[in-house]
Length: 258
Ligand SMILES: Nc1ncnc2c1ncn2[C@@H]1O[C@H](COP(=O)(O)OP(=O)(O)O)[C@@H](O)[C@H]1O
Ligand SMILES: [Mg+2]
Image 1 (tube, protein in one colour):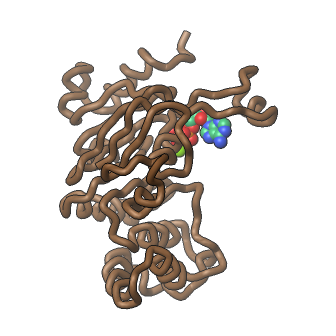
Image 2: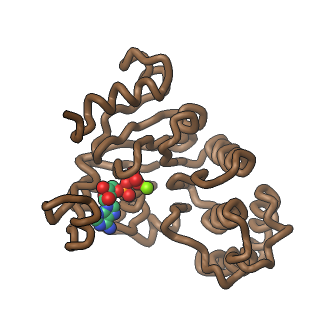
């Protein structure tokens, strides 16, 4: 279970970042009073365009960022007061954190298994399952730097799941993957949902949110502007599909519109 209550994250901007974001303000409200809940046995899809605040939200859930305001709990543990318990309960995957390119998938998997306090037998059993599912055995002893984007992503996913956590937080897990690899990732996420895990996935791809999520939260310019099942969102926005609903929401909430 993930509970996000009134989460706000404001970044302080240095001169370079101000220039990058083309702003004269020295702070940026990346996430603005977002509340949401993801439950066991459900895939919650966080859908939003680039810069909407998806990664920032998920980093707060994963204890990597401290909220400016509001609170987040995972499996009942507060991310700020019980960070270690939260980290023990989650798999976190994001493009900003990469496996060390100098080591192999096999080494990294075992390394993180030990870090999580697992026994060698537990690690081996888990490795058999996950490396099997993702077809990693063929390249498990190659250095990460020698692997293709898809192989790297599969290895990163397997490593993130080594300790069989209750909660899975994947930030744009299929971005940059070919369609076959992307499918193996989304299929496995559905499997995790079906065995009762809490899954939250961010994406900017409408069709992915549509097909994968049991419930969808739409985030635009740091604010959650819609939430519900696909059917609920389509009905409320009188839309034929999610893309249609999204553009209706975008024209309503995008602050840069004239
Ligand atoms: N470390 C940071 N410092 C300053 N601004 C940031 C930082 N990280 C992200 N931002 C800004 O916060 C906003 C939300 O970013 P992010 O959470 O990465 O969005 P998304 O993942 O939806 O693309 C963007 O405007 C981004 O430029
Ligand atoms: Mg992002």
